[in-house]
Length: 170
Image 1 (cartoon, helix red, strand yellow):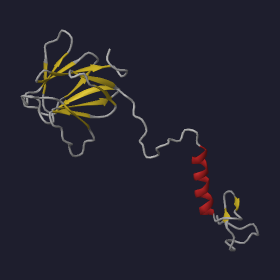
Image 2 (cartoon, rainbow, N blue to C red):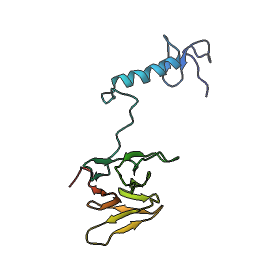
Image 3 (cartoon, rainbow, N blue to C red):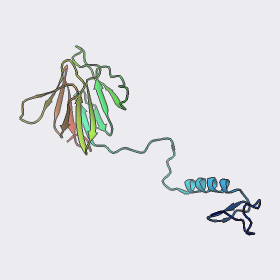
């Protein structure tokens, strides 16, 4: 199918949009760009900071024994001196460790399948999961374990992470 101008001639030097109608004052390309700009300007939900990513859901919280409450909306790397891991997009949280019992990159807490998990990164002293009346469970390197509210993660140096619900500490 070829586009024809209002006079029936293909192309005939007229600016013509085959789908909508002749464009008399501006070329089709400018009309399309302008329409997008006009729609964006009229949008009532437009952010005042257009380069900000959309808000991510919070899947749970982590309460650090230092008093810090961390909302989990993406992967979080906890450690004594955490450094980015190539290929992983993690928020880095530094934990106090005067005796260096906590590894630089100790463990990752992440949202998965509607809940939270912890992934052990092979910390020398490990991470112990305490859940209710069960004996502590040592999380090994590369091991991924589901977390539930009230679970306590002992990283060493008297630093613990307590799992809370999405709204904050229970």
